[in-house]
Each structure stands twice: as structure tokens, then as C-alpha cells.
Length: 149
Image 1 (cartoon, rainbow, N blue to C red):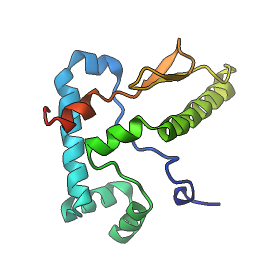
Image 2 (tube, helix red, strand yellow; image 1 turned 90 degrees about the vertical axis):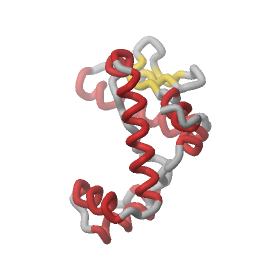
Image 3 (cartoon, rainbow, N blue to C red; image 1 turned 135 degrees about the vertical axis):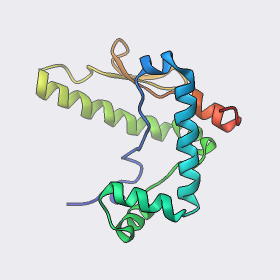
């Protein structure tokens, strides 16, 4: 047994929104991103109200939540998040996501290992290019960086 602190960078917390929903409402993407970075800023500053809510929603005591935070890498700003999503390390981690996802689909539906794909902001893909299921969209992070949300 081990915990995720022994595999740093392997578990990525992301905000996931259906592509169709973003296409229907650009304002939704902007609003969600603005809220995300507002909360990240408060979390980074140790805001007691935010910490309390997050601990409670995680089902953890405040002490346990703070301990978990010490073992977690947060991308508190859009600048840091943009840099990470463009890194080779991020693509390596996401390749493991496609492998895991494909193994689960294979187990459940007898599909091949490369049945799903991920599209990155630079246009690179992993997995099946004809079956993109996860798009890493940096558009809203860029708007946040430029303070245009």
C-alpha cells in the first residue's frame, strides 16, 4: 500500500466541462475559470473559510486536509497551469490516463487499448486521434492570465 505522495504529479485535479456546453456558453467557461482561480488564491493564502469548506466536503478533519494539501501540488495561478499543460511531463502523465481509460473500456466492452484520445493545447494528441474524449483547453487559462475574464 502507498499513497499518492509517493507518485508526485501522477494524479491531476482538473475542471472538466463538456465541449458542447462550452460551445453553447463562452461566459460559462470564463465564469468557471474566474471562480477556480479565486478559490485557488484563497486556498494559497490559507483562507480559513475555504479550507474549512474543502475539508468538510472532502470528509476530512481540518488537520487531515492540511496534511493532504502538503502532499498535493496546486497550480494556483493560470501562469503556472499554462506552463504545466505545455510540459512533456504533463503529456506523460496524461498518456497514463489514456492507458488506464482504455484498459477500463477494454475490460468492460472488449475494445482495444487505444480506443480513446486526448488533445493538447499545442494540437498534439495521445491515443486515438479519431476518438478524442479529453481536450486540454488552455483558452480560459490564457484569458485568466491576461485578466480578461
